[in-house]
Image (cartoon, rainbow, N blue to C red; front, side, top):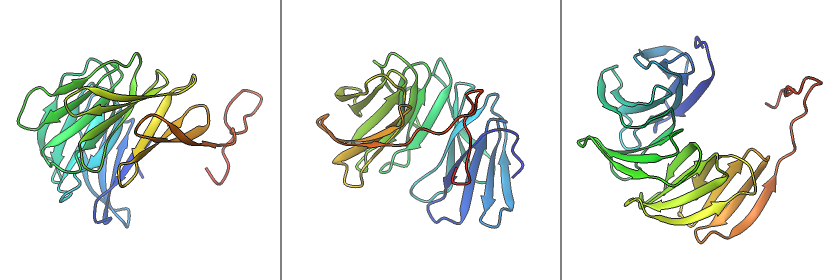
Length: 225
């Protein structure tokens, strides 16, 4: 599709447009026929995460390894730049309830909640390694952070940790809330996914077969990949 590095993606709410962000530091907006509508430039580091605003889809959010997140309209005008993290931003998310609030997770071991009209936001600290992923509950009253320190944490929007989900020894790369917000699903580099309740009790573990590797230790990709 034209990018010169790894790509992250997002669908618009209506599903008629697609957003791609790349390690080449650019983001592109496409229609479903793969026609590029617009290209967003300006970041000085790899783009690791992109998102559409969940309400009307007329704004996009970009998280970059240049330590910033940027909010844009669909015509390519930057609305706001969020500065404050001391290291790469790995993930970004819009609030599902308020269209003026976002969440960022960074390799500075923290996550931050930002309001568009404020220069600073609530900071979530305590992880001892990079925050790889962030997520809101459907009611936007809880926030989840996943870290390379082998833990997932559940927070109130006031920055107070409510629960910690501990992994044996591996980086946690992703997590999502269930639609009703009663359970969470986490994924780790130990080739497992785990389902938890909000009290920190594991409900189920899902084991995934380890990918085959060649003699040099490189993963062998299959058609299913």
